[in-house]
Structures are given as C-alpha cells and as structure tokens.
Length: 100
Image (tube, rainbow, N blue to C red):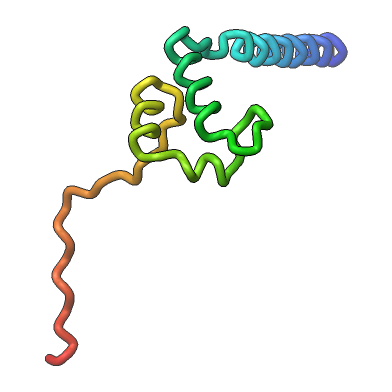
C-alpha cells in the first residue's frame, strides 16, 4: 500500500513540474512583438543617441535622451512602466509641541 501511495505522489509531483515548465516556455513564446511604428521609432532613437555605434544604448547614452524623446518612447510603449509609490489620502498628523 505504501509503495502505491509513494508512486502516486511521485507521478503527481512529476506532472506538476512538467505543467509548470510548459507554462514557463509558453510565456517566453508570447513575448511582445513591436509594431512597425515602434520599430521605426526605436531605430531612430538608436541612430540619434548611440554615440559609440555598438548597436545598443548604454547607461550614459540612455541618460542623454531628451525629455521629449523619452515622452515619445513612453507614448509608443517602448519604455518599461515605473512603479509609483502609493499615495496616501490621510492628512499628516500634527506634530506634538515639545515646549509644553
């Protein structure tokens, strides 16, 4: 009985791992594809800011991108959205007066 239970548990674990691995590969295959407009904007930005002509933007080249171009890229969906800190709606508590 114990052998049957152990074999059943092993098969269950193996199938769970297999399904999880299939999900991971499925997510990789459905990567976001760029539209022709996004590709064009991306190549324009690369041509404009790639000073060492290596085909990619490093940190210094990325830092040199103007605000207008950053806005264009964000509007086109070419930038990663930054997570913003949650805003608090509650007013700040008044500070206690230490002189009392």
